[in-house]
Length: 76
Image (cartoon, rainbow, N blue to C red):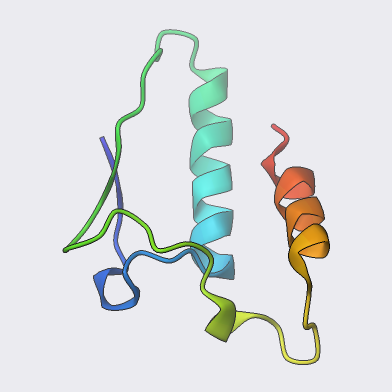
């Protein structure tokens, strides 16, 4: 079981959490005996979406740019 642990921000991923999740899932991908990962959120919410307050200064990305970033970092 994997827990998003940022309840103060409703578990909204920031760059550090996104990197940690990517690394975790890449590691799980290589472990062929693991077939299911249960992802839960700490606190009252599962996940409120991307934490825009922690976006890099000067990088006001739109929806299309954010989707590109997510797809490019999600590939194992």
